[in-house]
Length: 396
Ligand SMILES: Cc1cc2nc3c(=O)[nH]c(=O)nc-3n(C[C@H](O)[C@H](O)[C@H](O)COP(=O)(O)OP(=O)(O)OC[C@H]3O[C@@H](n4cnc5c(N)ncnc54)[C@H](O)[C@@H]3O)c2cc1C
Image 1 (spheres, rainbow, N blue to C red):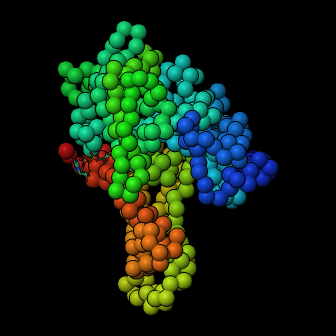
Image 2: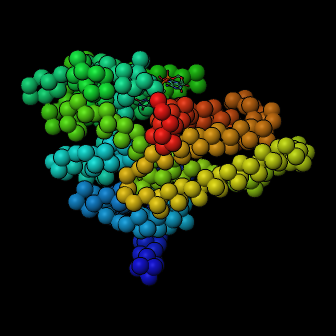
């Protein structure tokens, strides 16, 4: 096996060297399938080549657009891509969230219809879970889906729809049986966003950006075949999709794009602020040094745990351990930006004025952005509830 894996690595390395264009290396935009976002030529070429090889979703079966590689081969592809700083060719809620869910629960016809085009990056997916009165208490969702004969009719709203204005499709948890107990009347349905019954209203944030939207459904329609899994059993399927989402946030996704968490080593952090005048005195501050070292050790232990979980998980489906990784990953990500802020002192509070470098302004925005990691995909408090009940087995 080792010899086979070595041969696979050699072949992978050679293929990547020839086929990964220069414009697909280093930081940059990673496509997520949206047909409303034009791609740079090298990014488009990279997506085309990778999907032709089945490497946008290496572990999916070949018939559905993957390459059917083993877990070990998957890791080799990731390592070799990282070695040459190649960006993932495709990411997003298509190949990472709804794709694996269809692979697990879809009918053969649904798999054939959705998965190969998803793997080619043809369609950007949004997530329609949250509603104004259904966040942590997701089962309280009210959006209605009614049997309209040859199609489904949808009415209601979703909120916090990330990338809503660029979405082509949205997967929604909807209420199909309002008279049943709330967990028993929910279904998962796929809805085309470009139709008269769907209206997207961007939510403008204090930063001026609008990464989210409210999405309104006013007599929108969905095809009869586009309900995933049995009707009224969407709660279990929808929770499974959340595990796929959390496996991405926890860095243990083994389906599509494994976007590596941005980990700054102690050396990098030190280098970063060594440019600023007070760096030496701060480094000699025992408390600060301890904080840096603790973070560094925790980050390394976390990365090793991720690798162990990937290696130990027998199938490509995530386990409840993803909740643990999501909580800890969020803590370390937030701590990293806080340590950096502390290191930068007043230089770390720049927004856009003169007197701050681009890196300092980025660090401040990063600090703000990372407040969200303990909220999206289910808050840290909710993950702790799941760990208490489902992992440790504590009573309700
Ligand atoms: C960046 C970002 C992107 C998002 N993208 C999407 C998206 O694309 N699609 C989508 O559907 N949603 C999206 N969301 C919404 C996200 O899923 C919700 O914000 C999240 O589930 C929390 O719900 P809420 O905001 O209604 O907070 P609430 O549920 O009102 O929670 C408020 C506070 O109370 C705590 N709390 C609530 N219930 C309990 C409990 N039982 N035990 C302990 N503490 C509790 C929570 O932890 C939280 O601190 C996104 C959110 C963010 C921040």
